[in-house]
Image (cartoon, rainbow, N blue to C red; front, side, top):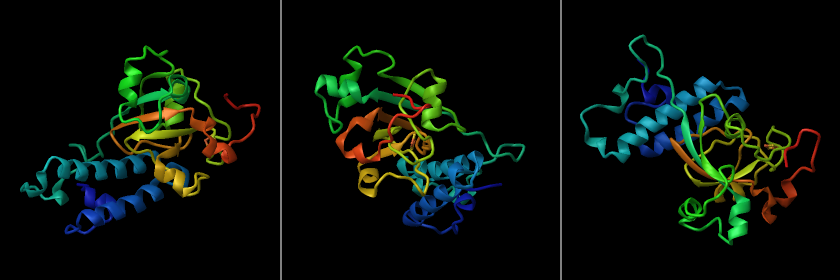
Length: 218
Ligand code: FES
């Protein structure tokens, strides 16, 4: 048996703050770009999600101890992580329609604007894919340049959900706090995501953009 507490390296009496702290540490260590593996990364993600769901559903008083949640199947293998659903929107549409990244109903507006499927739609991110890889597998040409965390050409803006960031990335803390992430090495850490892609044209990302190279898209 493997419990969420085992995965996060916590004692059975850990509280919510301990879980949060341990998760932030573990998800960095397990990130595939930091020497971890996709499987390890997804397991950490799943452990955190199980504990979070329990709190959200108000199950905290449930008789099942979180330490008794088993992340393995009957064969003793860790259950597979399901793909993550992502709703995306092209920043160009926001610009064209005069909307703002801070609009509360941004995606509702997009749903009613009859946008091109490449500008607004949905895709699935499989457990072994970064967000950019999933977009490309789905046939979309999202911008990128270095594919290694050293520029902001692949940047996206998180409207809902969470996307991981490797420890050494170029995104300044203040922009990361506002919700900017890199799609080339960002892996979903929530069950659903809403992101605006193609935000590299924003003035605040100007200094982080690489000039076009031979393999650069847009
Ligand atoms: S393409 Fe350069 S950081 Fe993603």
